Image 1 (spheres, rainbow, N blue to C red):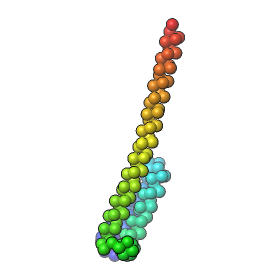
Image 2: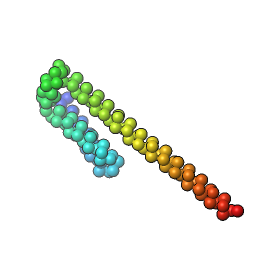
Image 3: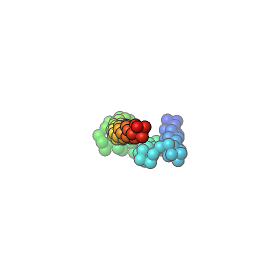
Image 4: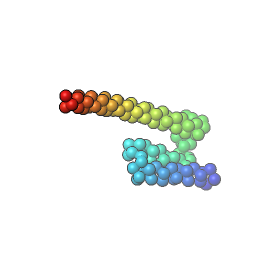
Length: 118
């Protein structure tokens, strides 16, 4: 193995350890951790067995294997962006609903205080 492959394996293992540690500490939710652990596993396999990427590039009809890797990375980033947009939309709706409920409760509390003050 040449130096770039060793560095690729070390980077994949370091990322795998990092994601596992974030999951263990409860910082990263399981929903997202599964995706990142899968990505780390694929990167580790590709770093250890670069011929798999060459085979996949041949099957897909891509001349340069690294181009296939960049396209796959771009699609992954697109999927993650759409997922995060969905999550943000859901959280925004929940925040708006909670703010409205707090405002209604505050209004009711003010009415009760005004009624008791009379």
